[in-house]
View (cartoon, rainbow, N blue to C red):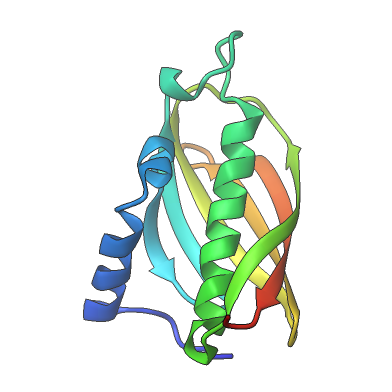
Length: 144
């Protein structure tokens, strides 16, 4: 597994590739740092992310946790031709939020031959308080 962070032209190319995902555009994810052991970025939440009671839907937060962990895990194994897929996502909702920028930091807790475990923290940019925290276990799949 590689340990370098993606920067420069390679990072721009990967961001362009990720931007082709309609789902990521719907979530509004932006990536500041992309690497095989750490991912950072942010997204802006508003009414388009709300459940019927005016708060950000927990499914949005779960999806962002899964997204950051999955991309980081893929970066860790892609040079070997493998891919990584989520097999478990456990996200805790710490405090409600309805609008504003949310910062995301994901880091690898364990990266083994067949599985990875990532922790992802979503915090309000306005005060740094955590909104959600999740753990994602991923399976490293051999090329077909």
